[in-house]
Length: 121
Ligand SMILES: [Zn+2]
View 1 (cartoon, rainbow, N blue to C red):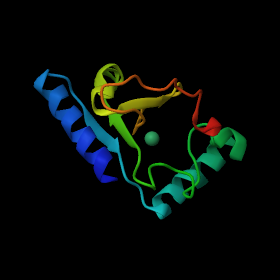
View 2 (spheres, protein in one colour; view 1 turned 60 degrees about the vertical axis):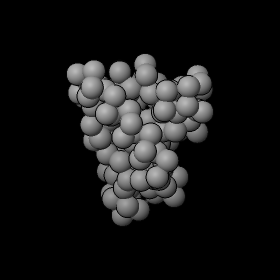
View 3 (cartoon, rainbow, N blue to C red; view 1 turned 180 degrees about the vertical axis):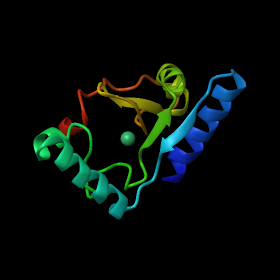
View 4 (tube, rainbow, N blue to C red; view 1 turned 120 degrees about the vertical axis):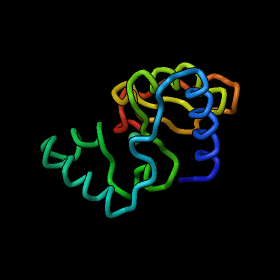
């Protein structure tokens, strides 16, 4: 994971836990091979690249492969991070993925508007 993201997420997780909120990483950095497997699965599941891209991107485009994304859980923790993550620059990115966060703002500032899904980035 990219160091700035790792630091920001660790600080956020520590604060969540201090407040009694469950929060942990469900998927962070992925190798290109791991992402290729997810992409292949997505193509099979969704029947083609246009539909699959709403949920998974190929390795050369995935922010998980570049180390700039973190998926979190459970839902309560993700909702807490959506409400509080901007303190560390962490923002939910997509309407359809409540679990996916990236560094997307300056700490303490407002997050950018969410995109409908990953296919529009
Ligand atoms: Zn993700």
